[in-house]
Image 1: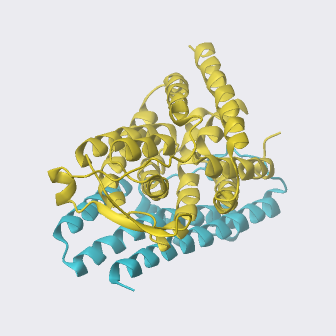
Image 2: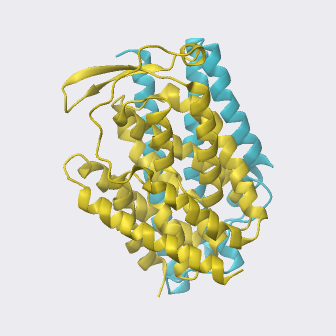
Length: 123
Length: 276
């Protein structure tokens, strides 16, 4: 198997792993939501919307302030984070792969997407 | 009564149909949520996140088998991500009434490929333009139905990129994958083989959805109780749909899908007209 095939495989596994973990976390989040609220209603409460300034701050706050009563919201938010990180890690891996292959064109192409996403998540 | 369980149960067949017809589930889910009384911007933001799961989940096996053209995907993602960030930003700023009309208009493009079965008359272009050659846009994959290795070249990289900018813009604005539009650009402009085109489009949709999500994440529109059941349901449906894709004559389902889309277009227009 050549390095390109191995790279394809690796990103395929990253995608499926990220999605499976994220959806399991979401499903547990939904169950915990039921256990604490005793219903499955779609909520318009502010607590059930993602809020904050930017992704990276949100990540830090999430891990600092996960109190027991907010476990459901914590898990559902965590599921979204894992989901967001899945394609993000995929671009990151691609930059590293092309750097290792010394393919300047594709280092620049993948780096463009990585920088754009990082900026958009950070502001 | 819409709750997380009923939304989860609705999302499974929607994801299944979306994968089977190649047109995606979000173009059904957004107007359906609007019909059920969810604010349109919330519906869009939540679907955008759910798409990351649906698309990445179903793209995975085709990437591992080497059918997806990863280089073509990386190149096109430069355009779709810019488009999606701009599109999502527009949605957070404009009045909801415009979104009903944009959505109805874009749903109409789903009919571009209507009635079309997998084409057999595809042939790789003879020559490549400078940019496509410079980008090394070519590839090969093993066709299981024909039992041979198919090699191909890609054309018109610049025009294809611009087409993808529009696809990304629509996807980010409306919280959908815009898969039908992407596949059309890849097949008619870039001349990708149909199988490579649909799997590569699926792969790109995950990244485009991430770009859209990066804007919606802190717009205060992302409702976790909407997003969670949809992400789980559509992905389950899509994974099953992807597996039976090759075994089913899907003409009947296609007609069903178009009937639903036609109804939803009418409903979005109605909603738009009544809220002027």
